[in-house]
Image (cartoon, rainbow, N blue to C red; front, top):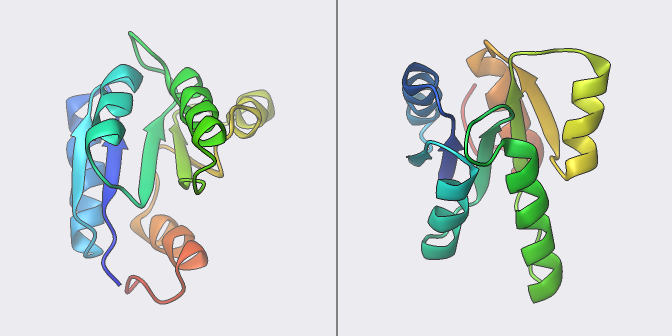
Length: 129
């Protein structure tokens, strides 16, 4: 199975690291620096998965996720899996992520095995841990 991911993070190092982890798992990815860029990328490309940073300038991950979910509802399209990535691990922030429409949340720094397990939960056997 060939998957393609979009990684959204305003911090260049975090973006580079997440894309490197995905590449090591055999999942090609593109990057976006904020939610607005993510919406543009999703409009012009096909992705199977989004890794969405929560706190970003211009448009944060919560707002971008809500916009994606609204677009899906309006088009009656398939739900795109969105994994939130956050530096905070408070229950309130985790609840906010899920309420916005994120499917899962990873806390930074996440381990490659955590991401591999999430991907394999969505697509069994898609990546080798």
